[in-house]
Image: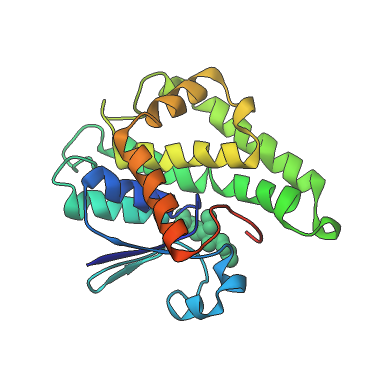
Length: 219
Ligand SMILES: N[C@@H](CCC(=O)N[C@@H](CS)C(=O)NCC(=O)O)C(=O)O
């Protein structure tokens, strides 16, 4: 049985989207954000205090892009991943990790130092610098975003990883500053049936488990 610990719209959306894309059975456990402060007992599940936490039998993972990759490889039967002998394999791995390491991390600094910290701890210069940092990286990959998918000519876990970074840009307030290909690419990904299913799954789980349907505090 697969179990995913998730906060609304947070990085754990990547594995949630992958689970829906593959049509797998899973249990979705919702947490208030940040769980480290608002649900202390979660530290027994994941001592890092971060989400996602993911379990598949004896497998335990805490990195959102790696979980999407794992799900594609272990359960995808070629649909969501790219195999080692495919010419697009290198590009696939690069985008899968670029989505988290290069496009997501700087935005979490913007979110934290512009919005989530109490006013006296906010750092506008750091927030502005990392907003520019993110937008410059996103602009630099415009040519790669000219098509519907970022590699392999089809929807893969790399689109889930990069797509989530653009989803976060919407929450951080940076989406309007994205260049045209990024905006069109992200609009197209949101038409994937699995995207709507993942959104619906988190809404339903938040409601039934009495958890706020929003990122609220901390980072
Ligand atoms: N690189 C990790 C980052 C995980 C992470 O930091 N998640 C954030 C939410 S998007 C979190 O749990 N923050 C709460 C905290 O740091 O207490 C991933 O991609 O899963």
